[in-house]
View (cartoon, rainbow, N blue to C red):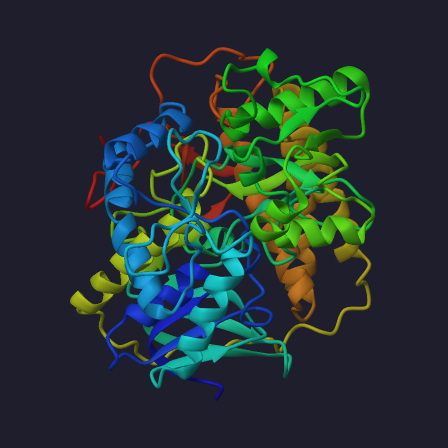
Length: 549
């Protein structure tokens, strides 16, 4: 990679959204896909359960739409839901043509008319989760990475961390990128830039996400002048493995779809006390129920029991979970699984339209980094992969149909007035302090007092981080800390603005849900700061040019 490379499309992020977008661009477009670690380091690789899609005659697009709207607690944008769900069959067909091998029913003849094996998850009224055992993300990631590496027009650039976007003539024309292999910052020009960096769940102390989920794209877009919406809706996955040797290991919701029960230590089931749907209630309800029982009884965890299923079934359908638990001395065909909630998914993000276009011309945002209106106040299980593919395809079509001018000469990165740090301790200190603060004060259950304390503490952290950033040479840990602090501040601002409890956001001071649902939309000033933001608090932009009802 030369110091000043130029591409037609620069994609920042190498998960499902970024790779599928690259593969659907015209072959004549020169495209670069950046990953801040190795190409398969993102969340897609670790996705277990699968992808929601309407694939059976007993199911319907209307039912999938209704389920998504119900889970979203009144805040989903119906046109976005209908657009996304209606594309699910075509997404599956495209993935199959790419080479992804999904599971079929084992009780049918091995011919072209076999049905997919579909699982059930919380919030769904039908079995509609297509999967590859419990390694769906890995199956998809491996295929898309292989195909992208084989494409003549796609350059895969690992160990490259986007620092900030470059604006010129009120449009996005590239990005400054830290090349970790040479420890230098490159200036990359592009006709169009795509942010596909995933979510921000690493802002919390306990998370199911890999280390890279530090909200990079959201923070980068905010600094570039884009609006951010609904950051208060942080989804906590109800069931992550609770074990000192099991960092960030998710226990897929599909186990509950196959009848797994949540139990207290004495064996008492408790979910029906909170919701008639029991273990198959939406994730926000299940996570709050577990949190309530843990706090009420002073528990370290609760338990998930799937022991009514035999070992052969569990090995074939959940091999990753079976083997991982067994390696820790837990035989899930006999033993209960200790579980706790953990931060899992960022439902808010950068405001985009149906084409994934942001407020800044030339900048597109896809996947968990974006706020499309699909998830509302609570993402329904397994809709996230579907959103990645639907909006990546829409963005690819829009980029190909748009006349994005080539960028002119860009100002190179200047680090002549900074030095190598001799105070590196500030980074791990603030990293741990920030994540503990978010877990304790901006977690599953909130209050205005806690949120105000968090806002003040985060502002002080951001000031110190900004001073450090301005004095010393940048590193990946510093960039991640800078972005995490930015996203944490945005999250708290949105949470303080919402004077109700809805979906994933529960505030003890406002336990009721308002009659009318509105979005929390933060509008950056120039330059944007979290201490000085406008709050639109009404609707996402008009749809399809933007996203309003």
